[in-house]
Length: 140
Image 1 (cartoon, rainbow, N blue to C red):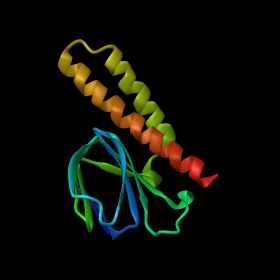
Image 2: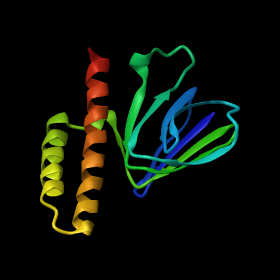
Image 3: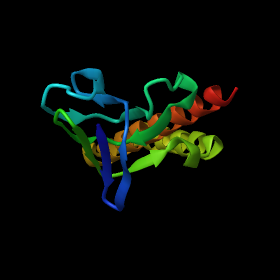
């Protein structure tokens, strides 16, 4: 099946894959070829991609997403998101520092708009940190 991961800055993935694991509002789902057609909301989380049937979990590729829309047909999974960061591109120390700053912003928010922005940043950096951790554990 074909995976298309599309962000505001362009196409991140446009390849044949064996399995895709997606974070949805109803919970995480695994998608294989011939999956029932579905349109769903993607929530902030990690997308995991298995390219070949026999690939072990250590070969999974991860992307941190901030949420978006998922469209599944029997032969294609299309994920439209604002941004998607490949696990290899995330620097764990930077993500920790950004998360700490976002948590501070959240704690000190004076308006509901500031709180909403800070909460979105907390979610974004927590997901990035989780994906960085998955990649680190995968390498060891």
